Length: 76
Image 1 (cartoon, rainbow, N blue to C red):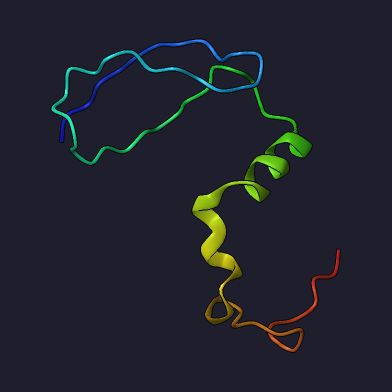
Image 2: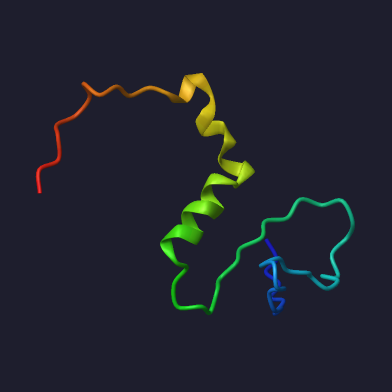
């Protein structure tokens, strides 16, 4: 596996643009984003997660395996 670091700055809508990586076209890649921002606000984090298509599988009926009867109630 080859690691490539590309530094960029987020646009006003939070998106990024990547420069040429020098890799061949059509090969699978994984993108890891490490932000230098202290912490994402919880509401923005939850909004990001709720709109993230990589988590759509959690809406599949076969992923709904737990019921209210599972486990024990959490008491603070």
